[in-house]
Amino acid sequence: MQHIIPPLDLRSCLVSVRGEIVYKHYRNVQAETHIAKINSCTKSIISALICIAMDQGLLPEAGTPLSTFFPELVSDPDPRKPAITLEQLLTMTAGFNWDEFGGQNSFPRMTRTDHWVNFALEQRLRHEPGTHMEYNSGVSQILSSILMQHVGMSVAAYAESYLFGPLGIRDYEWEQDPQGVHTGGFGLRLLPSDLLKFGQLYLQEGKWEGKQLISNQLVKRSTQPFITVSPQNHGSYGWHWWVDQYAGQHLDDNSPSQPAEQMNHEPLSYYYARGFGGQYVYIVPELELVTVLTNDKRKKEKPPIDVFPRFILPELWKLAHLSS
Image (cartoon, rainbow, N blue to C red; front, side, top):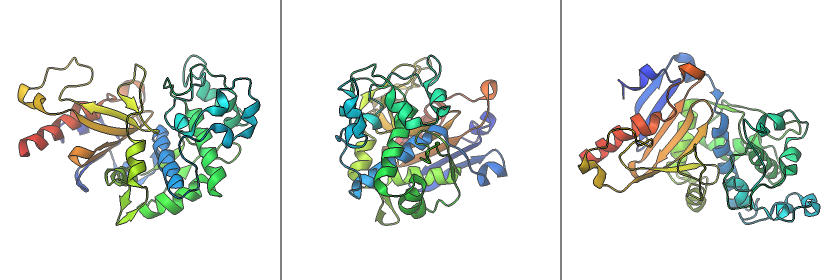
């Protein structure tokens, strides 16, 4: 990867196999030592905290309706809205009329209001809940608010106690909405090395240094494919995690086919956190692999969004099969 990654001018690229870093690239010292925005990778951190709160019995099970947390929704003109479940929020299948960017520009509009959660809850339903995945940072803010309601402290304080603290993550910043709810869909700044720890925790099915931080049942449930995503995206979506497969050929199907002997293997399943502008945490359980990519380039200077499936995974997949 030494010949592929540096020319792309990524801010960072870390590849770990079986808990050992096998490749490390930082653009400069600052990229290694300064926290930076992880954008929507924040969503997967929120997912982890929700799982921890469920394990602790602080949050009810995933089928619990939204009206449990926001009783005022019972009087909503649409009787489907109060019945939206926690799981439908986690899988972005709540059905709200929402265009993240472009169209209605729902996300920027939310951040200009004085009450983000109310704005997200007030949107009418465009789809039957549970049937269609619509990417929506508003539901992530609703989830952060629910979490704060039920754990009796701020989301960041809860993370420090039960996720960041145990992982040794001390250097971070986290934005808040006007009500003091930490941003559920974006707004967290972390070091790449700490993102790698987060990915490694999931690879280890929620266990860290002998302690189960998240039950393996909820790690597995939250990273299972729940619903097929809409085009321009690829694969499926779980509980605020993207889920996909690699079958020995690049996703756009325009690349040359792989040699026949490589195609005899079962597709490789993986899941990942994804943030705007090139922030990724990839976990490939079968290869015991975690990869973190971060970037901060704009527009024309940006590397391709598919650095991992195009460049990193094929190389490691090949090595794994050559050694097996």
